[in-house]
Length: 296
Image: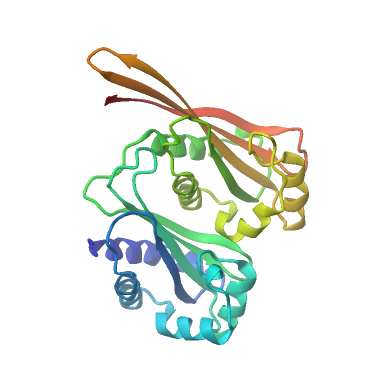
């Protein structure tokens, strides 16, 4: 595990420190880091090293992992609530130590090819407001991931930045990513996290993280295709102050080539639904087309 990544992460938080303090965030703690790969990971050591780096490099107060675990047990919380950051649960834990924000995340393999070049995605949530205030993706290999999804995320962010997009919302959530390909080659959680991370870094929107809406997703009626029902999304989102939902889907066609090879054409479609006007799609754009050739 290349722990120099903890230096990259703490430096990124240091760069955002003034902005965080302006939001009233000065006491933070590390939540869970899940591992969705075969990579052997000493999570306590990773969290402790990251904690040490944050203490050394920033002026933020960092609450020790051991204290959080003890507080977690004292509250008698079910184990499942440690897998994502539910706002109510986070608030209950945070009040015990006056914590303003939690950092949490996951390690993924290459989300578009499932190859073993893992990446760590970390996010920081303001537990009072339930929005993300910082996010960072750090490759755990020397080479940065260069996939169609990476380019799709950049394209999405650039389009949202344009004033002519007509986007007039502040609090949004990227809720679902649907893989419509027959191969099911995509890790949808990783793709959504990559998108969210880039949007938090580049845009001034208030992002409500997908992990804080896990229970909320279960309340939404699905269409026959397994897609979230737009009408229900609007009602549930409005009750939580969410003004727009972003969701995406991946389509993929394949073509057999000579020399026992197959070419996959991958295309990502990103849509933004304005909760106040469900019939209107504020943005729907096909991005990130990528052709990959593999031996068969």
